[in-house]
Image (cartoon, rainbow, N blue to C red; front, side):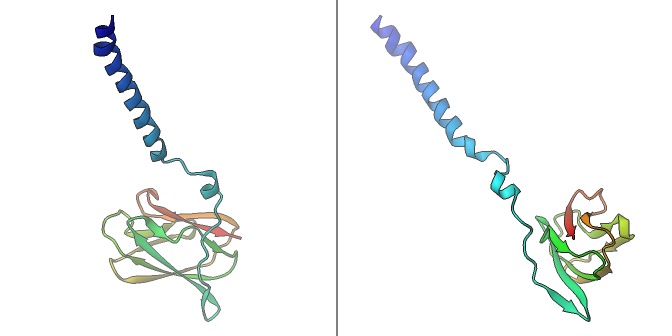
Length: 140
């Protein structure tokens, strides 16, 4: 009976122990957002103004439109200065359907886009491919 346990059972036990260890180490590789990160406030964007108009600088990177979300105020004119810094995404323009904005973003050149948010809430903008890459303005 002893040779049976040594030759058959021990390898199975070693395999089971290895599988349990692999499962425990891969547990941290999930893409779930921790509750604390999901409730994080919008990043603070420095307040810049030109002639009473708020200026918000945005960059298009491999991560998308940054920073996002950005806090804006209803009925306060905004000038976006958007610079596309990558050619690795489809975000080669800014589209805001509700405001009739569809502006091309040449690589490495800042582009000014001026508009005034008319309604409070979440304003999603993005690329022309159905906003596959997008950013958010939170309008108060």
